[in-house]
Amino acid sequence: MSERGILTVISGFSGVGKGTVIKRMLRDYQAYALSISATTRAPRVGEQDGREYFFKTREEFEAMIAADEFVEYAQFVENYYGTPKAYVEQMLSEGKDVILEIEVQGAMKIKEKFPDAPTIFIVPPTPDALRERLVGRGTESQEVIESRLRRAVEEADSMDQYEYLVINDDLDTCVRQVHAIIQSEHLKGSRNIEFRTNLAQGMNKFLKGDR
Image (cartoon, rainbow, N blue to C red; front, side, top):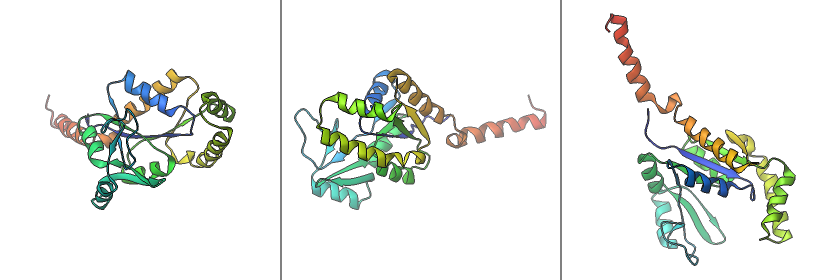
């Protein structure tokens, strides 16, 4: 079977806990790597190049855009953010399943370039549970919380564009389900064409009476 890794897109509403799910997957399973983005924003205290982000100057980033070196990129508040192709390809070739945590618009761009990439949307058990989680974090003003909820309403219209919906009600269960989805993707026939072809050709000997 194919030993090449799989690129998986994970999205979800702000506050749904997708970051926590991904951290647990990286902790509990050796098969995964988290895609590292490049950015033109300055490093924050404690951040290291190649760990949180690949930090680039604006000139370096725009040169990478011109050379088509990003899977996807966008500009937010005067800074660029993007997913470098080279890093993703390196991890996939090493057999790592690369997880890309990204918002809806970026996810659809990824799907255009990687049509076989599974897409997973993490959802809360109920709308009220989402509000409770945002409030419970205690890190944002009521105005910011309401803004995030309005954004969630918009993103809800895109849920049907994802192949999988996973409810994050119990963290352990959610992590196991996401892991199972990604691992099942390795068994798809479309990912194992060479193995399938060789197996079928090898079985032709039975038509000749060979044993």
